Length: 431
Figure 1 (cartoon, rainbow, N blue to C red):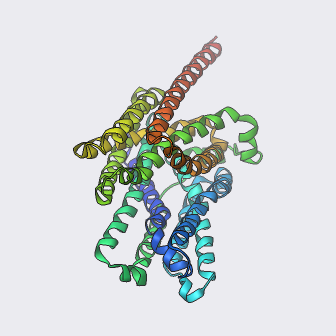
Figure 2 (figure 1 turned 90 degrees about the horizontal axis):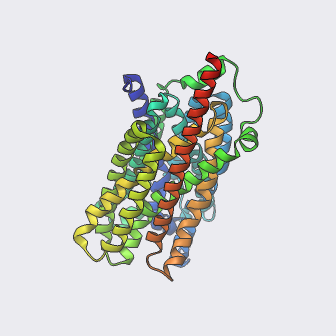
């Protein structure tokens, strides 16, 4: 049975909102150098300004776990849609205000403090957005379409990153440095804030998930603090979701976010590296849709294992061969980007691991804590490792591919055991 028109509409609106929210979150990093110049003293060394700007950017990641846990707590008790709406409001308003902030030249030390506060609010919002969106779309479709639903949402999140990169490139091409510093830097934040508020208005048309509506009707909501139940009764599921998130961070951070820098370090021109990265993001969006469709047909565990092998092999070829053979850069990066479609199965498997009354809290806690640790440590550790072994990024993704194969086998085994228990229960009932 295919998705209904209402389900397709829900997936489309959720993906659109997710794209706009991720655009708001990542656009800061594309203007980090400009923000450093504007929000810190002129006499400060350039490297320190940039470091301070990246520090403020990183503060958003540190706020993710707390924001995600709080939003998920109320999402399990008050409704998925309410938190789905609140997260985008918490992202859109700070983004809009960033575009209106006074700079250091006007407000002195207050300027970076205000920027930091707004960035923390953004981080809290994004901590609830991705898990909340995956839960929301998963509960609007049958389990037979869960991977495609999560893949569609993940493709929308990647689209937000792509739009941020394209906006930054467009403004850099249209404006000179003086115009960018004078007023151009405000444009992406103001536009993102306005579009975010527009997405909030669009999301008003979405309905509460049938799963949560049924829980509320049956008065089967969590009887205690949802996170307490998760930690007490679902430790194995938390471990599975955290390992899956580790795999997701490896695919996205290394293959998409860090790879342009790696390529430039190996002599690839900046414009070429960024253009190839844009192609890879487009292919990652297609990969999510393809992987999600195949996972729904052939099993999430099997497709996770196959896509893990593809990710490790394609990235190794890209990293080892493309800098020496420029003609291979675009096709190899497109293939590696397609392999990032592994992010379709990760949330789908993690969502299914937790029972409905604590699903939002279980996924949000596992995802945000693992992302904060693994996502925060990966760039630093890989940068240090490359001083001793230039192939460290390729080796890291190869190791994570092996982890993905193992997780795929784990998921398949759990599915067989659950199926056997279901058959046994049916036989007992019929006997």
